[in-house]
Image (cartoon, rainbow, N blue to C red; front, side):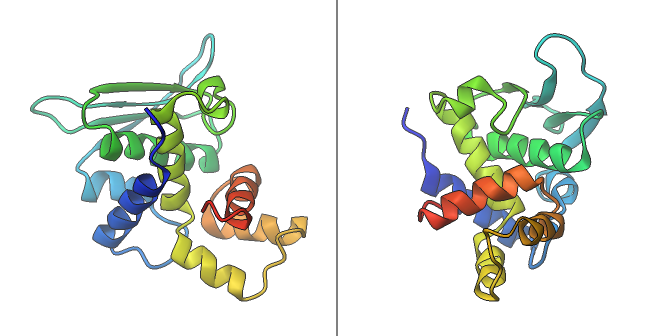
Amino acid sequence: MTPRYALARRRAQELLARAGVSCTPVNVYDIARRVLGAEIREEHYTGQGQLSGMAYRRDGAPDLIGVNESHSEARKRFTIAHEIGHLVMHADRSFHVDQQLWLRNEKSSAADDACEIEANQFASELLMPSAILSADLERGVDIEDEAEVKCLAEKYGVSVQAMNFRLARWSMGRG
């Protein structure tokens, strides 16, 4: 399957609209719980490959998003957004387990697992919405200035790495 980048971005934008999001940082906890009716559990995951998160569709019960409680808040937010992406984009799958998300997952960084790529694209748009990011960039943010990128990352509640990746794709016209 070829990754559906535009569809992932559009689905994230639709979810942002349903949630009434107009500013950052986007409250992914609220979106998961209030808009999707999902339950979020933070657990301490250890062992080989250190689990970042998981999404599980449960018959007759709210969908479940698990996230590693030992990760930073920015990392947890990305993991939750990524798992929301799986719930929204991949209804045909009942269970997703993600180890070391955001460029640390060999499958997603190698660009050979379309579902992981789509979930990353979805998470990126959910946490750093194009409309809001575009407005910030039009105000003259210098994306080459590390301090400005750090401030932007803090505003969106994401890691500097996630923001740099988003800005790099943005500058290439890939959102």
